[in-house]
Image 1 (cartoon, rainbow, N blue to C red):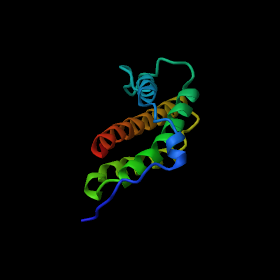
Image 2 (cartoon, one colour):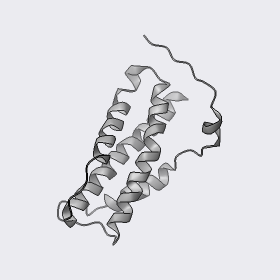
Image 3 (cartoon, rainbow, N blue to C red):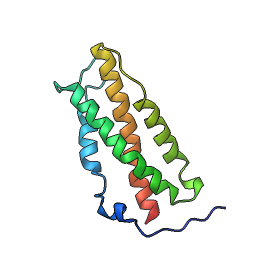
Length: 128
């Protein structure tokens, strides 16, 4: 069994604010609200802005989840790395020009962000 030890935070880790999970979840809720069925559209006008926000949240959170998972034994981090891998895959897919394609893409990214947020919170609890 692999053992890991916690290391003191490096200077760049000390200066970095923790991820704002509450704000990330608010963005997710705008895309995955009660009307997130296949025919429902998000209740906001600027889908491009929301999609960009979700992408930005993922790009900030993915390295943090990887860092937290790297401090724990492998058997406790399998799902975290699977979520990170899936989120990176989703980030690499571009939406088609049609509105429904852009909505589907934004919602898939929001679901990936939700899973990564859940893993971040779980890993923080496991590291404590």
